[in-house]
Image (cartoon, rainbow, N blue to C red):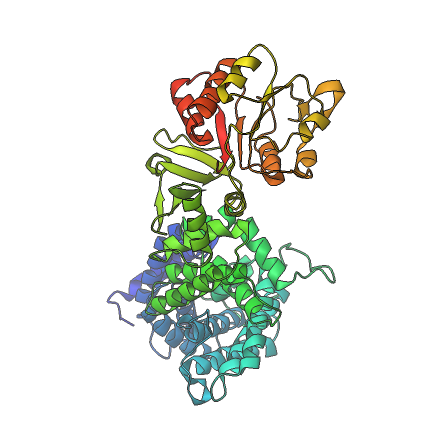
Length: 605
């Protein structure tokens, strides 16, 4: 440590460091906006530390405080290795002094244990749990054992607070589990499973304490309560037991979630099914939680799913982005391996957007496995791309190349299917909406029928004109729900009827047609197009017709006046010009901007 030249500045430096440290703890550990206060506090304490002689009784408390702040910057802000090395030296020096105040000695030892654990897991290829393998486990296992020693010493002494005790116990579980897994000759596979389970259990307990990432546990302990902070120059050697702030109560008996269920809920709570986590600044705590949960599931022996591998790929990608150190390349390699393992199976609909986002984030040249099935379906549907909205743009899977790009609605390919309920304004593209990639696979597997084969159209003033567009067709006049259900094999089924406040169709003789009734129906010959009236529940009712066997649906997203002119032009384009339904809707929206506002196509044909 450098030595200053103005010892008279010591009181001023210590007071300045105290104020800055307090500001930092209040702002929150790991928050980038608070880093300047932390760095300035470290600078002030570094100078002040240099003014104390080796035998000065006040040197140890200052060393403990400075070591704690360096550890905080290393753990909470991915500080350089020099922060860790200096922090270890300072904390070791401070703990060697028997007169170090009790509160500082406990927190200093916890922080020292955290720095040792960073050595153990910091360069670990987390997805495969592959540390430097050698007899005895190498330096990583030695670091884990040193960390466990620190935590045991804390637990063996007087209790600072029940919260500190509980947190230290979880960290000891993690350190012992790591040493147990890799402490022998080679890898103890059985112990790996126990270590992963211990990490996941520790993470859950830590979450219950309201802390966050286990890797920054020490710094969070330091700000749990003012009396627990490693304040400067604490006097006295007696244990202090502060009043505990109110926190979450214990879990009710039997309420612990199954790891796979907890993993799914974790992803479900994230924006855009987890894909949104890749749009912003990586969260270390989230990465640790996902890696711990996913690895627990994958090593549990209860069978794995593509979604489990996908969750691990997400956690590893976030981890590599958050800690772009020398080991980041290995972590990204593991993330790509997990992504490819996920692609080898059938991804559930809610996981496909995350799959595409990870393909883009990991710079995969083309999608694999499940992705190639989707590109084949896109080509079969005559579509150029599948798009998925994201918080920072539009993910686009290109049918011809299998490449995933991130663009905007204005840069979509000419014929694009979008997984959304309400399509964005894309004036240069012919757009259809879908519920999911699974709906795409389902619809393209159905035989497409000629649209003029069996049209069923509404009777009324324009009925005869609409029928002439197809050269044939049945005209329905005030049909009942049973009449409609009996005609679901139509190639075009146009329903023009009143709509209830909840979007159900109000049909003849006081009958109603709901989405549940349609979805449960059996169609003799599938592959038709349904045209729904304004006000009908869209896309819910449209999806019910698609589930029943139709391949496309046209409906309205916005309230309109009388759409008779739109319908005449729509059927002319469908029956006379034989345009695809999506192309006909696109042309109508361009030509009849006001009348056709809100008209949309869902499905593939």
